[in-house]
Amino acid sequence: MTSYKYAGANPGLWTDPRNWNLGVVPLWDSGSTVSLSGPSVTLHDIEPNNMAISAGSAVGTSATSIVLDNAAFGPSLDVRVVAAAPQTYLYDDTRLDIRVVGYDTNYGTIEAIHPATSAGSYFLSIDVASGSQLNNKGTIVADGRATQGFSQDTILSIGSADSYNRGTLNNDGQINVFDDTVAGIEPAVIGTGTITLARPSGGVSGAFPEVNGAYPQLTFLTSVAASQTVELDAGQLTLYVPLSQPHRFDATIAGWNSQGQVLLAAPFQGSSVAYTPTSPGHGDLTVSSTRTTSGQAVTQSIDLHLAGNYKTSDFVLTNNYLGTIVSIHG
Image (tube, rainbow, N blue to C red; front, side):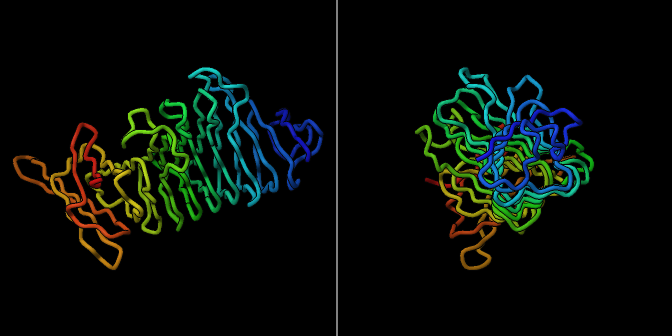
């Protein structure tokens, strides 16, 4: 097994041998490890594979950044957020930035899995540039482990810097948001993949929702296609529902139970809920809101597409300053 360390001189290109401690470019080395810390590295029109990349830098220092420029992570590639130094204190945080430029694909695994013994948080930021597309055909996983009792042990942000011409996330694979993770997805989501909220590690005990953040949280800021599935095994799914475009979340929610809830963000305030079966094992949950505009009552309805067997009496609406929380009786 060969260990490569990125030195980052000679304008930050992965394919420049002068940037590597061994003077050799790692591309398809079986079982090799690659260590990145500090500077930015650009992958242009290449697909490294068969290796594990460990990357991360302390928050507040120069961020470790991987730029994908019409490139790919191979199917046997594992990109891991790893602290550059021991995380002894609560604010010893570690961050990795991945920037997507052009048309880029992840066939492998991108992971931010928080060590159970570390105090600080892990930040994984994936920014999709304007007009660009990230194709996830592998796995992206963020897991805070929820063993320390601190909130937000792992933070996953899939964003887009240009709010007027956002990039696209084509998810044909798997995105996992696990224990004690706060995640946000800003680009439009298309593709036929699955996004899962769950607590596989168990973590800190207690009733849902945990005030210490032991349950995962995921927020969608724009549209999610009907071809996507969101597994709501445990945690909170937050949807921003523009009043002028009420049907932007079209994905199917599966596995929803009493350990999960959906927040329809303010200004939406739900007043009624109804479940209508549409086919065996599927149905639509309609949440309606009535507000007064210019002295007239205006009703807005939001449809959530569900996989499972439910009835209207299973659901509870709770309104607060955040919006409307839709939950299921325990």
